[in-house]
Length: 466
Image (cartoon, rainbow, N blue to C red; front, side, top):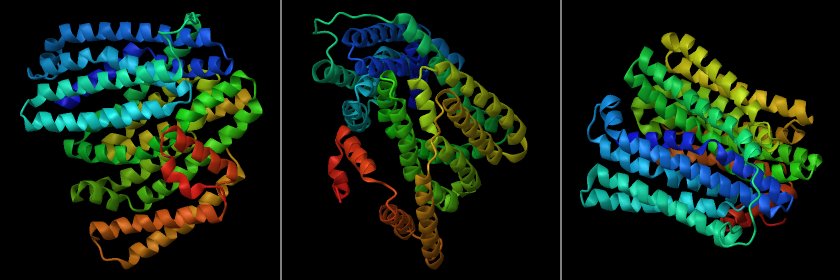
């Protein structure tokens, strides 16, 4: 039942944020590059007021109508207090999103990583264990989520105010760009809603047309494949503010160079994971989730294609945000969502989870291709370069080595032996990438810089200048 509270909080925060997360990151990057502190402050303070105000309204509505939601939609009176506690977290979560977006705009994502990925997650895990141990139950777990969200908000606020850019204790007066910011942000709200719709459509239609068992198998295959897009999310957090700053200074040649370089990074990172998911799909699901989930292997193979495309070409969508073309992103997402609905409706009744996987992959490909195509039309730049050939060769040789090793081990292989197959793939791929010089010195320096941004420089010592 805690997952219901989380889902309600996520939906409420999406609407309360009004798409301002993307707007804050874009305009903080833009005005920072122009050294306009007044407008930078205006963007942050205005967005905080709107997001917190809308979050408080959402919290009030959830608190008042918690009983109707719990009984009318979920037929469970035990959810009333859960919904109210999660509702109270809404203004803190929306404020955290704005502060984290501002930190990304200043290219200081190490504070966001520390607050939301390390402290919040660790505190939530420890407090949840304590709550379960002392028997406080579902309400106690809800309070833990509320407290850790507040903790993350306080850390982000402290980091921005005292480490990066003061918005309270400063003499800089805000200059607001309300109309421009809202015009930019609102299409991102609608695009975000459509993305949620697209993410849930295959699951809902599988549940309607097929069986709950098939839904369960599909719901482990899809998030497994989605790990590919998580790889590009890290690079895009730095790419978007840097590209926005360069665009603000009209340095389009540097934007083009960075666009191709980030695309290469995403391909370098995502390709070996795609190979593992495609060639060892059934084994991956069996090892991670058990033999009952092996039937999702074909779906995982198909989904891996779509998520690899989304990973590699994701920088195009980020550039549209930098270029202030969020209305184009909304149109592209609308087209992808409509295609997703149509294909799910046509394919799932006859093909089940395989049909859902085809629908999702096709929709992802259409979205990123449309976005990349518009970038080419608008700025005459594309993400492809001959640098992508070397990782392709490295991947082909690495998967050949992994398949050869897999052929000589007993099956079903015990976990340590099966993991060694992926170690062969990863090691051979990594060595070949370095031997083929797929990453030049500028790539390596940027990787080291990224590691320093997130406080992980100790893991990149082997990339020191050769």
